[in-house]
Amino acid sequence: MRVNEFKDLQEFINEYDFESNIDCEKHIGIEFTYNNNYYRMCCEPLDISEFPLLENGKLGRYDVNIVHWITDTEFEYELIGWYSDMNDLLENCIIENKKFKDIIMDDNTEIIGKD
Image 1 (cartoon, rainbow, N blue to C red):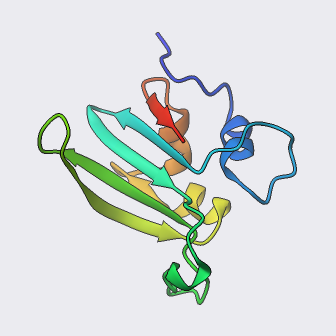
Image 2 (cartoon, helix red, strand yellow; image 1 turned 180 degrees about the vertical axis):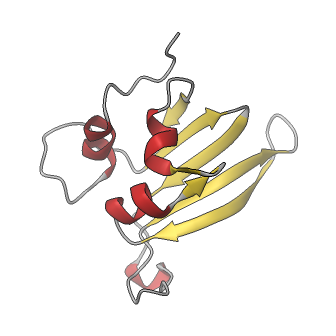
């Protein structure tokens, strides 16, 4: 049974790519579980001076983290990586040996929250 709420990859892109001109509700972060692991992808609107400079010379706009829950209210982030744009995120972020785009569309990926 499919638990993932996204019908297709374009739906995800429309919600999280601020370069997209599609008129829909936009979000800056998403939390999801995959294989009993908790993840967060975020494109916080930080001051541009706070974006890290990536090896390709571009600024990191999207970060992906594993969330380690210590208690019900305490957690720590483990950075998977920073990505310059939506295409970089979808193609180059690897989670559990799979591309982000495959994880975010997997039938068993459960969306926990959006902000």
